[in-house]
Image (cartoon, rainbow over the protein chains, first blue to last red):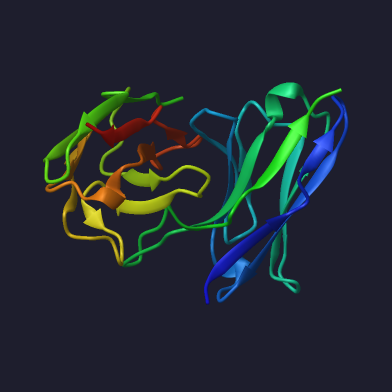
Length: 122
Length: 107
């Protein structure tokens, strides 16, 4: 079965760090582009970060320099290292697989994890 | 950054109604426009990619159209399981951006 399972969320104080993990099954993270998307309580979706199949990365301005996306091909996992956390980073974090069809990519996100909650508060 | 504006923000409809949601981009995004459905407490589901292509397993009552800056999601006959929030998203350029969402609830 193709699925993603996130872990690592929790309560952290402002300025602290947290590392989210996303375990993939049924496909390889190295063969796809992968993304993190977050959703603050009661709010809409916000794109956070992307890692391309070649390993390059991109970030939203709101997290650039604080968050790092990475992948472990041997473990088939995606990670998001979050440093210098702020209260406005409080959200459910989803990992998701990028969709490709007919040789074209960047066609949205077709497989999503269940999400993991990150709360930044003192 | 490309701004995505959905309208309406919410709507009330009855089972069997035809529902149309629009999404406007602040600049041309060709056909790099995707639609998602999200139910409370759940992850989003991809409905439509590349503006008008139906994702695998999505009922044919869902359809998408448009190109450039103006896009539409249509549900031809609303079903009970379609009451949810719908988001558009552009994948034309980084940073990817989402519309603010359209909540469809029961009239």
